[in-house]
Image (cartoon, rainbow, N blue to C red; front, side, top):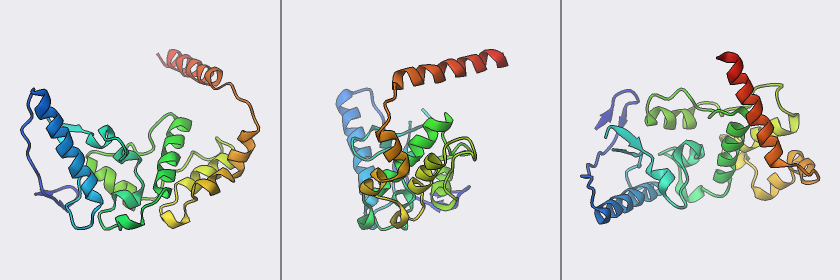
Length: 194
């Protein structure tokens, strides 16, 4: 089939869903295998699955594969070389997660389809924190994590030497109190807008 908005040519496999528990396990295993085999350059790329017309994020349900919206560009790009993936792909995911936690919104929010999502992650500039709202060390940390070229991205050892991490290793922070304060602020903002 051809996905008209993106021009992507793809194979579509229809699997009949059932209420039978054993069949559901087999179905999920089939989806998992399809997703895992997409790292091989000689197989068809796995984009996701649909159930009752809704996208089923089978990637998020797999144990060690991760969730596509948080995957690094080199993991999503069908022209990439899976043999070159390493832990720096996880560094990208960390950067996306921290950016989302810091801004309270997922950085990619303009997708109409999963294919637009994949294209945006691979082709567009990486997301960044809003300017002048966070410390320079945190902005740089996020920027380092979200390097499109994985060879320019730091590994775990290099991340642990970043000034943002070094500064916070020495601090004691009551995280539960901090989260409570943020939630209270958000609740107050909602009350003001209602």
